Image (cartoon, rainbow, N blue to C red):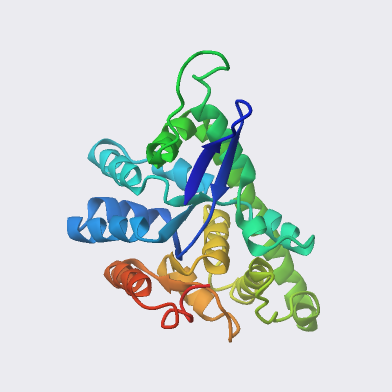
Length: 295
């Protein structure tokens, strides 16, 4: 959840981003389905966020959600408005997150996108220059995700260029690695060995093992456009959320990661109802009962 507070000695602000309960990561199809689908399920999901869950949300989420038009866009905007401040801005670039872990950052420090938060905050106060006499309302509506969509829309093309670059980099990397693996089957275990789960470096654990899996299945499931972005969604949701929605192929890949681990529980399209029910159960249960579900 996001909270902004003003200091007492000047026009400065402090912004806190804290997940107190269940961290939820949604691929964009799930956000759209929750927005347009069963209104009772949608209301339950929003109520869960307001009761202690938080949505992990990246710039990429916002870019893709500006695509729908008409009634679909209206439904998405309405849902995001209902979420209020119950979201956390997270990084998109998986390799940057892994680099942070390697430098010793904690999982929360690695996951959080400070630049996303800073840019958004500065945009929200742009109409309130010093000495203007205007009062900045720092209540829950200040961090509405609807405003994020409005902010992102003019930058959509440039951000899409960045995500296209992520696609190209991952596709080229995995193709090259697979070629080296075919030339020498021992290469894979030497350069991309199975990595046990590390609670202090969850992104590294997910990244290494997911890349290894992509190399092994390269011939049967070649990467194409948007798979680089899908990889980032999968890694961020797997490593930092308690609950994540992905498509069936990425769900399989995550569930094939080495165990034991404390990765997210993954749900695909037919399981959205169960996902909402499980979030509700986690929030309603005692702390002891949810130890295995909430990090």
